[in-house]
Image 1 (spheres, rainbow, N blue to C red):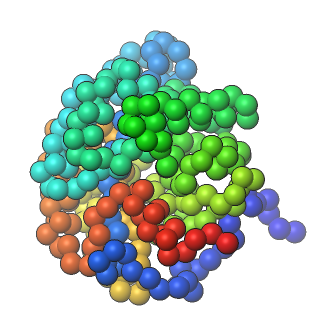
Image 2: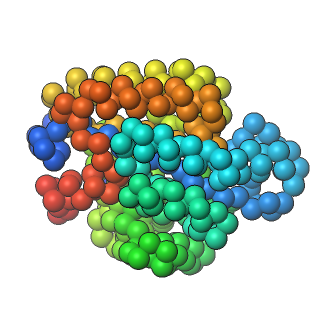
Length: 294
């Protein structure tokens, strides 16, 4: 008897797929995601943290997160500017009202804005289908209003989509999601409203699990980025792949981590032959042009 399945896609071995190139003949696509989040104070989930089980108000954990909106975001933006890497910005739309300077700092870098829900205090799995549809619509409209164009990509708050999130995203007009850390290449998903592309997004090369769950050091995160880059650059000779790197403003935005993160970025940019430094949205566009859905 087959195990229960999500039904979104079939298994596919990476070595059995068609060959293709990224723009300019590159074989490795690299993008850096920056998560900009805002949490409710004294209500809802305070989010994962060093003190997640404290009673509300969980001031310590809320303030730790808020450091990213006051300090870390601007230091991360400056680091990306210095290394010449255009960011993929995952935005809780509450940040537009709470800390608009944060969005402005990344907009100045021509950031590719991805919808990251309204707030990480509310996750899709906690909502009814109708409530989730309303939330997705509000996020879509907020980004369209502030950026002058609607978002094309989505990342669920808490990386915690519901059973119907993909259906609702396709229904609303989203082109891709980052919720499935399942592959080193994009994957077409089946939804009730038509195809939706899954663009690679990391669970491993992601500062939140690295620092919060595994208690690793800044030096370890640097080594993870460098080793992933070097290994995938070799792998790319056999098949084109994506390296995605995820950061959060309150984590990698800490001073001692920034220095090691900057060193990792400088390593990558100094070995740029065959590499396309890009954004999640541009990856989705290029792949769609090569392999449109059936």
